[in-house]
Amino acid sequence: MHAPPDREVLRTRVLAKLRTVPDFPSPGIQFLDIMPVIADAELLKDTILGLCAPWRDDGITHIAAIESRGFLLGAPMAVALGAGLITMRKPGKLPWHTESQEYALEYGVGTLEVHADACGDSARVLVVDDVLATGGTASAACELITRVGGVLVGCSFLLSVPGLNGTERLAGIRTECLIP
Image (cartoon, rainbow, N blue to C red; front, top):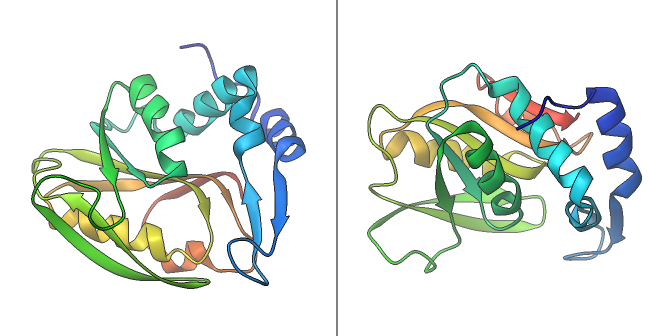
């Protein structure tokens, strides 16, 4: 892959493409839609390079991507970092033995599952998702990775939502957001 673009220029480009959808998925939620970002081929490539840049020297062996928009970023990040991909899914979506973790969302409760054999004890895992809001989903993902034997290296997000304290919920875990 090529060198990552200037971080500030990339942030400006991503922010210009983000779309806010009011009252989705429920009243009062201001949903940040990344689809215009990933629909732009050049911006998608640069975004993946920008997301990978802080982790290049950390020996990442696996990306744990959170359903579903995390898959869109996690898979190309895994390719760029030469890592395997672990999918963290909603209940009933994985065909093998799973571990599960319930968590609170800003608009309800959810559950994540991962294959019980998703990674071995020497796996160095980076958790990836599109948006860090309250940190509930990411915290559940981190718990699952350690439960199945992985070494949690950190968490990577395209953006964080100000005022929802997601980074505080992940205190003690290295967290990188392209757009803080």
